[in-house]
Length: 301
Image (cartoon, rainbow, N blue to C red; front, top):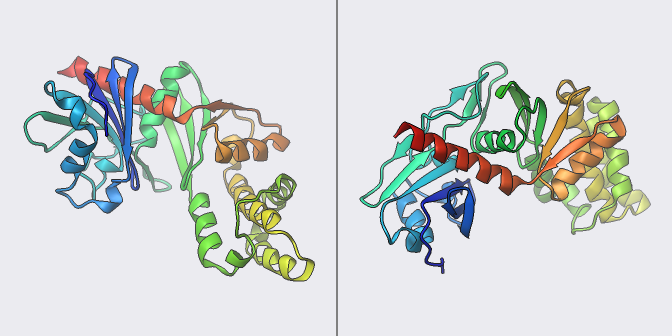
């Protein structure tokens, strides 16, 4: 059960599958809570009950403002927060108010959009704003690994352009639903196989489809272990992504959002190309961005 606290505001990161909340006193975290009540499993009238169930003890002592980012602001979310078109600062003071009953004041941060090539983000803009709060004056490219990895060009405090790759989702789909599911089962990892596969598709991305089936054939004919097949599958997909995103990382100041396994895989894939990356903690960046949004809200109300 969520602990009874007295925050002066509440930070919320509400994605498709998960809901995370922090009880805040200024920029200090008093407490954390989370649930599996993500946007994807809720109907339009389910958002307020889901939030109240999670943060109820934190709002017993008055109307505590809630600042939320993520898919909660999508068309299928609680209240659509219109996209802002790049180039622009990752965040502004125009937060969208969600409909809620007395005692609950929820403000949602807008996502960003790009016309050519068409692209969108929700939630990442808050992490970007937080990254810039933590690294003032930083110019370069921010790689944001995830189910849908984003490469973001930042200059003079603005998002200049960005590009999304479905690499993480492709890995999950191929691992679970393709013929390769028989070859990659398990949790093992072979770093050498990953590195070799990255190099293959980074150099020859047009060979991706053939190399994917080669993983299955290699297991059948040579008995390649599942750990090597799994790592190679990831490497082939990441290598193809790096080839397509070359204009973003080649010769650029680079940072990667995250410090876990996936973030380290991108760091290791870029290292042989002579690219050194600043690694940034995801939660720290998210909270810094939500805190910046709370300051903006206080300045405009």
